[in-house]
Length: 220
Length: 184
Ligand SMILES: [Zn+2]
Image 1 (cartoon, rainbow over the protein chains, first blue to last red):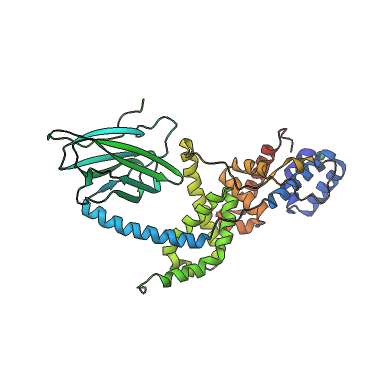
Image 2 (cartoon, rainbow over the protein chains, first blue to last red):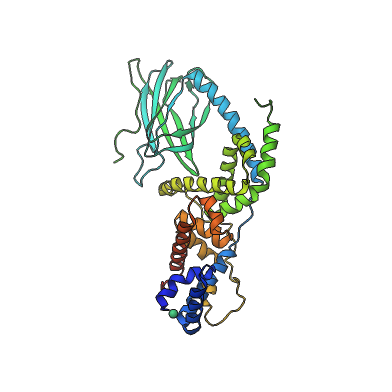
């Protein structure tokens, strides 16, 4: 048996999967060939090392934690459902938004939209995603001086949602209760990744305005 | 229709899944190589499985079934994560890895055993982290946890022939990663 053939059989030899005749041929070669014996020994050493790889204990009771997380999610979902229906918060989801390339993301930083104070204005947040992302948490923070129509006291909204690939639009009916500028903050979290951006609401004289699409146009 | 209240289904769920949580965490750690990721993986899985408690109750061999679902979830997240990492959330290097182990099983040390002293747990973890999830999974199941190829077919849903060649390729790859000269 050649060294090359032996090498092909090495793993099966280690695992005891060779037919008797082949196994004997391998053993005979090993008895004579120092290089192949060393190779075998190294492979054994690695296997031994893999078997002994430590597993650190978990930081807590995973089952209990999961049950608590489930209860929290169920509660949040109920609240969210009611709110979304009543306030007609439309979350059309788009995906891949979080899967960004290394360029600066156009969403990062601050955008501005002009709104007429003291009347509901629809503000569209558009999230472009290059892929579908499940279990995304979207949080909108509402500052003093801004209301979500129908929910004057709601300062923070949080959803668990899925972003679909492509465009995801969130329309927020906001009322600017201030004559000076205010800023909405939105945060997207997925796994241990997160993104934040701000939308400045600037008061303007009453005249028709559209929503603002935040993602059109490249960053540079 | 099930009776009202959470205690019924919750208790059923805990009774069914509870005995397997340690195993799931262990496997999750094998797949991910990171404690936090392993914990998240298990927790996400448990939350996802909770509404399926009736289905779980009908599963014949729950442990391999759960391990398979865990693996599928791992593959799913792994795919997303590898892309998400691009704009990384500043993942901290592991701080719970412990000391590199310098004494690996070495029942009969000889002059040719330098390789063993060369490998620390950290080095092996680093090499494992560079493998594809398929390669990592076969090494985790077969070489670390001692599963047979036949047992692995139900978890990975791949025939034994494929698994065997995958195992060989995975070993060849990690050997290459662990030895500069590539002769190993
Ligand atoms: Zn040889």
